[in-house]
Amino acid sequence: MASITLDKVGKIYAGGTRAVGDVSIDIADGEFIVLVGPSGCGKSTLLRMVAGLEAISEGTVRIGNRVVNDIEPADRDIAMVFQNYALYPHMSVRQNLAYGLKNRRTPRAEIERRVAQAAAILQIGPFLDRKPRALSGGQRQRVAMGRAIVREPAAFLFDEPLSNLDAKLRVTMRLEIKELQRRLRTTSIYVTHDQLEAMTLADRLVVLNAGRIEQIGTPLEVYRKP
Ligand code: ADP
Ligand code: ADP
Image (cartoon, rainbow, N blue to C red):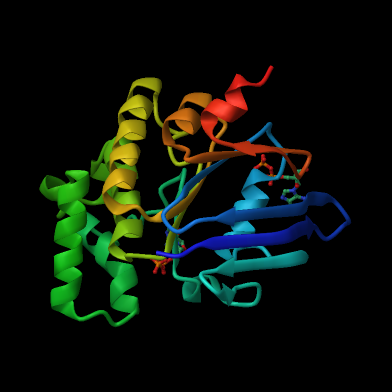
């Protein structure tokens, strides 16, 4: 686990669009931060800069005590969960879970231990030998989370992970993520436009507007305001 520190972070896209400006947040070890705000306010850009999928135009991002501005995504010790699952279609669930660890030359026994643990936490043990196309949307999203968990990363980044699921499943998965958070206590940044997800999951909410922080606080502090 690690803290994440954003210091005056900004993003100007090629062409001159300012997507994010002057964002400073100190995220504590084990804290769950939810980024909310209207479409186009810069949530995804900010998350992608922390992930290393987008260059940082201004300011500094630290994970633990390392400045990660110029560090490759794979070397940042973070795991990202996407809304489109991003599973490898030709691999079984087990292979999807193991793939990133194999690439990192994790010993086989350790891979098996972590896959079994993630499968137990997410209740996907019965599906380990299926291909993603033979799974429901909720099962696919559990596998996507499993891929993040087996990495045992310093932090999780979630990019609207539940927005492709139907309303009923979103409620179930929201509670599962809450339980995951309680068990693992891994530092997390979670982007959503769903107010219930934000209120259920957040230790603190960050409300962005036009690329800047409008409010930051606990769900009660933020949603109590008129
Ligand atoms: P959100 O995730 O809150 O919907 P985004 O981070 O996707 O917001 O977008 C923030 C702003 O940056 C928007 O004005 C969007 O049009 C712009 N933007 C996003 N991606 C790019 C890009 N690759 N090139 C240029 N502008 C972009
Ligand atoms: P790791 O699992 O160690 O992060 P991967 O090599 O599995 O590394 O892939 C990094 C990211 O790139 C994945 O999270 C995934 O979103 C995306 N990706 C790469 N190749 C594919 C693919 N063939 N299908 C779907 N997503 C892919």
